[in-house]
Image (cartoon, rainbow, N blue to C red; front, side):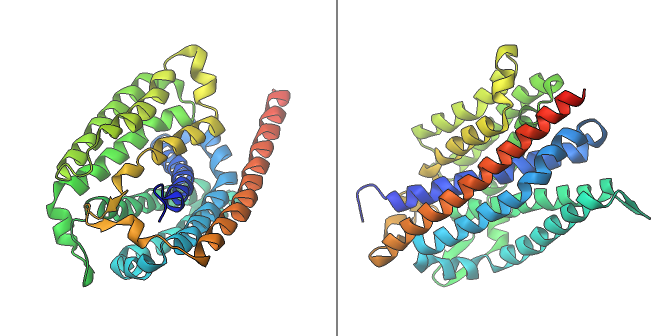
Length: 317
């Protein structure tokens, strides 16, 4: 294995982009559930085109991970079989409700708001499942790779995992107004983002110190800055730009790679030992290149479509 594990870092970068897209949907879901009437239009203008890109990016990351870490995929699938089953059920609910929501205005008791509320709730719960899995990969509480099993009661009994989940949720609530341009909640955004960072930092400390590193200052700064910029009138148009925000968030998430590298599952599993080598390495980079180009085109097409739609809306005013 190279001194710099390029396969891990590239895989984590793709995960960061996927996670950013998923988080942007979860933030929109929170707003839809809390402030449907007021922010329905700007949230749906973003979510309706992007949800398929998010799913495609997620599938791309899973395929890449299969090539990057083939020896751990089956144990992980067995380890988190229950979580994967729940995830798939929620994923089907998310996709079906938003698909019907695009076409149904009113059908008896079923209307647009109920369908998008179903989408929003499914998306938030998907986020919870992902955070549950990530907390195990970071802290290793309740996780055993030999024999492979996961003990939910052990996970619940350890405060670090629950604090980690709560901190992430608070952060998404804090940054949601920034992403969707709810300027009247600018101060609210700073307060909740700061609280979320404090709670998240406490969770890293509770992981018996193994996850707490001086490197944590990087994601802390990257996370709080958008909320601060949102309160500066001259910077609002920049920080609320969807492409800028997702790029920023992707870098922010990538900076958290120290939580699982060089060792994962509570510092007990060396990542380098699990990383593919030989012919699979070439296949990994080929798939990354081809898949990355296709997804870049998809995102570019989305950006062009949104830009044209916004220009049409302005011209009609």
